Every structure is written in C-alpha cells, then in structure tokens.
Image 1 (spheres, rainbow, N blue to C red):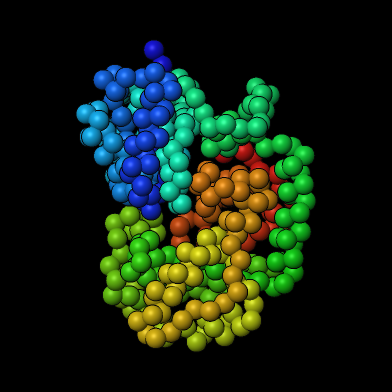
Image 2: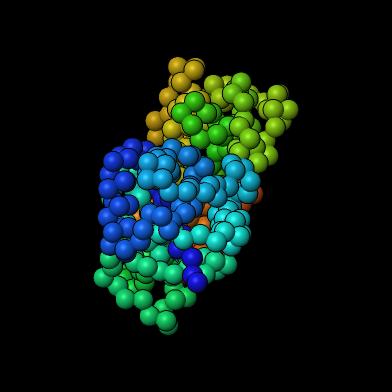
Length: 346
C-alpha cells in the first residue's frame, strides 16, 4: 500500500494555528480519512520548529493523533539534495498513513494539498492544489522538484519569452559595470554578523575586495558547517569598521548585485550598527532575476540559492566561501545574458 506523507511547508512566521486546524480538518473530511487511522509525519526544511511545523504538531496533539518527527537536525547535511536524501531515507523506514499537506506561507496563507516528490518513498497522490496546466509524460523532464510536486509544467513558449526578456536585463547589468557581492556570516538571525566579504567586477570577474572580518559574535554550528570559518581564522582580521571606507570607495556609485541581496544588505547593516555605520547602496537580487528568467517566480518553490542556480545552468557551484561564491554568481549572471536554458531536472 502506498504511503501518504505529511510534510510541513510554509514559514516560521506562520502563526494562525486556528486556520491550520480548520484546513487540516477540511482535508480529512474531503478525503474521508479518520483521525484514528493517521500518523502525522512532521518535517520542516528551515530547521525552525515554530510556525507551520508547530501548528500541525499542535493540531495532532489536540486531535489525539500520533505525530512522528522526521526532522533533520540543523547542520546534519548542507545541500538541499543531501537533506532530501536524508529525509527520504527516514520516510522509507516509516509505515505511516498520512496526508500530504502544505500549510501556510509568509502571509499565513491557507493550507492545501500538494504532490510529494520522492524517489525512495512510494507515495499515493490523494489530491493536489488546483492548476491550469496538465502534466504530460513527455514534459516530465522539464519539471523542477517543486513543479513535479505541484503538477506545473513551464510552457516552452512562455519560458522562451522569459529568457528573451530577462537575458536583456542580465546583459544591461553587465554593461552597467555592476559589482557582485557575497558574504559569509555567523548565522541567519537578527543579531548575526558578517565574517567575510568579497566583491568582484561582473564584466572582468576580477576581485576588487576580499577579506575575512573579525567579530565578537560566535559563529553558530550550522554556519560553521557551511563556511568552515573558525574563530582562529578571524583573530587577526580587521573589524568591519576598519575596512568600510575602503569598501565604500570601491563600490562608489555602482549597483551591487547579490544572490540574496536582502539578506546580504541586512547582515551588513547588522554588523555596521555597533559602529554607528550603515550600508546604503542600490541593490539587484540575482535570485529574484533568475526566478523570473526561469519561470520559477514564486519564492516558495524549489529553494534555488546560488547552488541551485549554478546546477540548473551547468555551472560549478562555489564552496560556501565568499570569494568562490561571488565568482559563481557572476557566471550565473553571464549565463542568463547568454540565454542558457535551465536544466529543470536539477
């Protein structure tokens, strides 16, 4: 018998537990599934066990439904592919009867059913979010993992049009003489700071600034597993206030590009705040541009980031150090300018 799997999607900001409970009960009623027959499998990719994850956990407790945690521990594996493989391995060992449910988004959206894409776990698709596109067998190789889950196929003509439009945007950014920026940080939270900054010219791919940054903020375990930067490596490095004038002079009035510009801007400002400094530049987010270019516009879809974009475009990913990642991000921009068609099997 196929397994019905519950995955907890959405974000840590999801707070509407009452809405989650209502939507889950509606789905159970629609599918004629009795609570006594269920075991909920809970999983949250962001590692944050609040929000949507907590909402379903609370529903299970209130409904007297067994809830198994298949949560992968933070730092257990780094890439999406590795986390997915570990998740699938966990699921393959469970004989559970569950619903494939995704609850919420950043705006606290309604719950809905979603196809669960997994090679190792046989899954019975009991329902899916409504879509206007019909999946054909011949189109399967065009799908991203998220699109396979949702049954969405990028129309070839729409994809070609998007590539045509946004390749021109990428070309203009290259011609503007923009700089690409990448940072490594102590973590992702509101009190974390930058520990490495790299800047490179998008046209020449020449590094114009690259330095480790000393901070008294401890690098958290997950960040260390990604960037491998140790306190000893930072001990004799300058603090950010000592290099900020140099960085500002290098950037001048040029536009800054980054794989996740809002994140880099936020972390830079968090690092500068203790010295009474601020970061104020014109930014362009490469990940947002690539999502439009590749018809993967919704932020809730396949978590591309630098590594995912590189793999879809046939580029060797960086090493999670600022110098290597900033050069990989320039190659992403140039690939878009050259109208490279993404490989949606990745």
